[in-house]
Length: 76
Ligand SMILES: [Zn+2]
Image 1: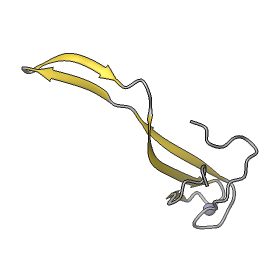
Image 2 (image 1 turned 90 degrees about the vertical axis):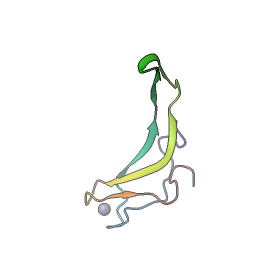
Image 3 (image 1 turned 45 degrees about the horizontal axis):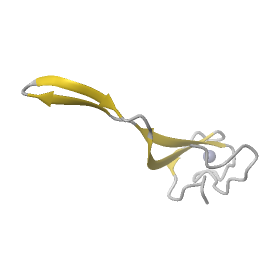
Image 4 (image 1 turned 30 degrees about the vertical axis):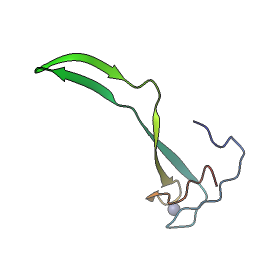
């Protein structure tokens, strides 16, 4: 799910060194569900769409710092 495109401005900075060279990792989840009936697996299914967890993680390319964004840098 792209919320910003190449060339668009990001207003966030590394929370340790203030650097503007970093990676934003947006977390998505999918669940594979095993339905158990009377002790045996009866069906296996998974959701076809990934769901955003709302967690966005930063990794600084200058100092190596890892952090979690409090505000989504892709939508602000
Ligand atoms: Zn940094």
